[in-house]
Image 1 (cartoon, rainbow, N blue to C red):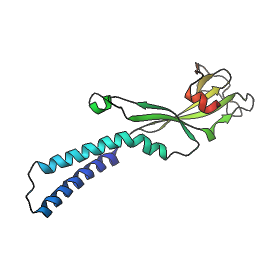
Image 2 (image 1 turned 90 degrees about the vertical axis):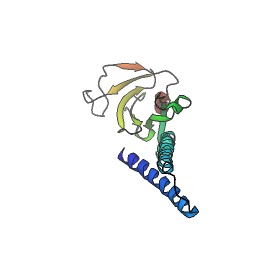
Image 3 (image 1 turned 135 degrees about the vertical axis):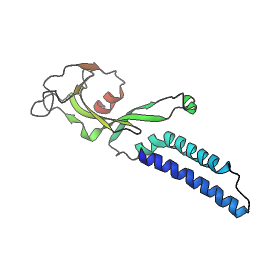
Image 4 (image 1 turned 45 degrees about the vertical axis):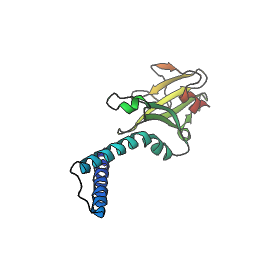
Length: 172
C-alpha cells in the first residue's frame, strides 16, 4: 500500500517536472494551474492503469503449476469507469503440485486454495475434495487428522457443481 502511494506521488512530481522542463525549453512561463493539473491527471491515470493491470501482472508471476480457478471484478460507484468494465481485483488459485491424494481413499484429495486480493494479504484455505461425490469440506485447526494428514471427520460438506472450477482443477 505504501509503495502504491509513494509511486503515485512520484508519478505526479515527474509529470509536473516534465511540463516545467518543456515550458523552460520553449522559453515561456508556466501558467499556475498547469503544474497541479498535470500532476493530478498523471496520478489519476497511473491509479487507473494500476487497477486494470494488477491481475495480469500478478498472474504472470505465478508458477506454471498454479491454476487460477476464479476471478472477481467489483464495480464501484465512486469510480464510475468501473461501471463500464470492472477491473479484476481478486482471484482464487490452486497449486496442482501440492494436491495430496488420500492413500486410504484415492477419490479424496487435500488441496490448499489461495485467495488473493489487491492490497490485502493472501489467505489460504485447506479443503478436502471428494471427486466421486462432488463434495468439499474445510480442514481447519479444529479438524482431527489421521496419521496421513487427512481428516477423520468433517463437520460440514458443501456440494460442488460438475463444472465447478475447484473440482475441475483438483479432479481433472
